[in-house]
Image (cartoon, rainbow, N blue to C red; front, side, top):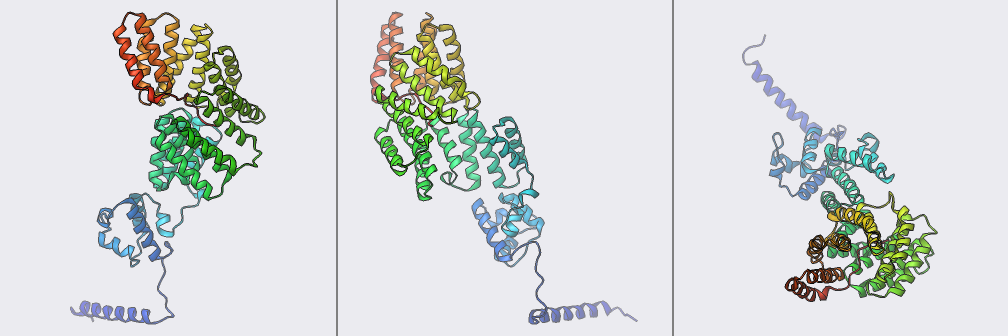
Length: 468
C-alpha cells in the first residue's frame, strides 16, 4: 500500500536511475549516442549558422526570437545543441537561406522545388518575354531565400534590359548581386548586361571597371571566348569615354590573344570596334573600310542583330560624309534584321538614323514621325542618346519652318547633352545660335556661342552604339 511519502521516494529513485543510466550510456561503447536524422553534423550546422548570421550582419541577439534565445543560438553555433527543423526554418527565413542548407549544407533537389524559376529561365532563353516576366515575378513573391530572390531579380533585370530600360535593369541586377553575395565579374552574363546598362546611362566609369575586372577573370580562367567578349566590350566603353589609346591597346591585346581565331563573329567584332574607333576620330575612310569588312563577315553568319548594328554604323558614317541616300539604303537593308532582336533603346537609335537620312532627303513628314517616336523611347536611356533624339526632332522642326519649336527642342537637347559634353553638344549649340540669330536674338545667340567655347574640351564623341 502506497503512503503519502511514495511520490517523493519514486522521484528520488527515478533520479538515481536516470543518473546511473546517463553514466552507463556515457561509459558503455555498446550504446552509442542517438544521432539526429535531420542534420548532417551539429558542428557543421553551427558553422553554417554562424556564417549566414555574420553575412547577414546580425548579432545573436538580433537573430533571436521567442523560443530561441541568444544563449541557445550560441550553443547551436558551438555545436552543442541540435535545433529542430522548425527553428532551422525560422532562422533560415530571417537569414535568407533555406533550412535544408542550414541542416545539411545542400539545397533541396530541383525536382522537389517549385519549378517556377526554372520555367522562367527557360522562357527567357526562348525569348518568351511576357511569360518569363510573369514567372519571375511569381518566383520573387514566393521566394523564401536570398538565392531565390537573387535569381528572380537577375531574370527581371535581363528582361528590363531587353525592353530598353537600362536604369531598372541596373537596379535589379545590383540588388541580385547584393543578395547573392557574389562579385559581378564572377557571373559573365550579369556582368555583360550590367555593364552595358551603365554604358547606356552614360555611366561609363563603372562600366569600364566592371568590363576590365571581367576581362581579367576571363584571362585567369583562360576562357578565350569570354576574353574576346569582354575585350570588345571594354574597348567600346573606352571609345565611348573618348579614351582612344586605351581602346586601341585593348583591341590589339584581344587580337594577339586569339590571333589564330577563324571565327567570323570574332573578327567582325574586332572590325566593328576598329570602325567605331576611326569614325570617332573623324577618319571616315578607314571607318568605312573596317565597317564593310565587319558587315561582309556578319552576312555569312546567322547573327542578324550584329549585322543590323554594322548597317547602322555604316549609315552613320555615310550621313557624316553627306551621303543621305547611301545611308538610307543601308538602313533599309538592316531594318528587317532588328525585328524581335533589339531592345527599345537600340531600335530607337536605329530609327533615329533613318530620320536623319529622311530629313536630309526632304521626306520631312516621315522623318518627323520617326524622330518623335525615337525621342520618346529614348527618354529612359542615357542623356547622350536622349539628347541626340531631341537634336533630330529639332532638325525636323527647323526643316518644316517651325523655328520656335526647333529652338525649344534644341535647348532641351543641349540640357541633356551637357551632362556628358561631346561633339553633339557643340553641334546643337551651333544650330541653336544660328536659329536665335535668325530670329534677331543676337544676345542670346552670343551667350550660346560662349557655352560652345566652354564645351570645346569635350569635343569628339560619336553616337553611342551597343557593341557587337
